[in-house]
Image (tube, rainbow, N blue to C red; front, side, top):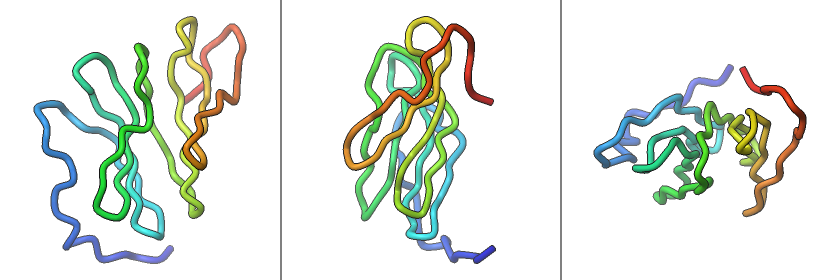
Length: 103
């Protein structure tokens, strides 16, 4: 596994809420989940900019990011937890069933 020097990253979140489970890919993109004032959402840091990936009325958790920058996580669809993917600006719900998917 390649080790990366992230000592110069500094703080990329500056809010009144807790941020959790940061994950970094080899290109230096970082994803995490955090509270947005209503529920838990997915965020990404890339090239100096923080972007809120999800913005819904349900909790989203434990994002992971691959080398290509695709992000996967689990979150509620209003009924139970399902798996979602973000790629090229679009969110796709991967699973849709009657039981919880995720960790």
